[in-house]
Figure 1 (cartoon, rainbow, N blue to C red):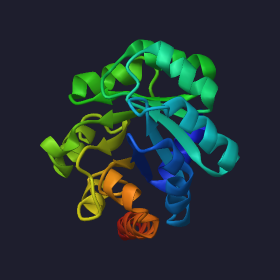
Figure 2 (tube, rainbow, N blue to C red):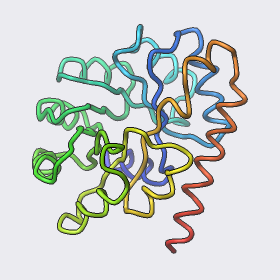
Figure 3 (cartoon, helix red, strand yellow):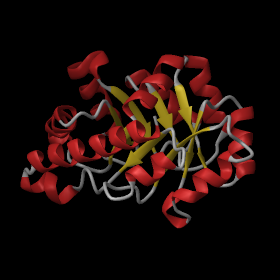
Figure 4 (cartoon, helix red, strand yellow):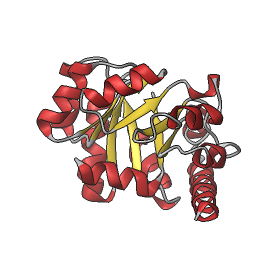
Length: 215
């Protein structure tokens, strides 16, 4: 489990893949991989989400960390883990999901918003918490929470894009979850996988540069 947590931190970016056609999943992940992304989240509100996790796992093995997103209960968490998910993300704080992930040695990333929720998640066994929707409060909110709770590692999700990615890293985010500004259904439908690759390169470079600036 620690290795999953550490690898997410090293990469710094999780690409959120939501509701795309299953026949496009491998081309999408390959574009992300070529752009430097090493962590992808496939949301469970996607048609055939579990099958997509299986396909990516079969094709990439340990070259790509695979997350299951929008997981609302422990049963879905277990199914995703058995399909090949390395980590499980939720939009809310569900301690049953955290417990299920810990049973299987996988990383739980519960969704929280307040300092109380963040600390509750850590007490329940989460190593990483998802601040969502972070766009409602902006990068300084991460810095504000880390003031009294500097031991908590945070994934910033919701409205994070190439323009503000560095700001969230500067504010102390452990990693970023990036959705439609990186992968969207319009580009998938048009077969614009080179654009997805280009966006991935830009975001990865922005994160790397900001980390270098922080020393």
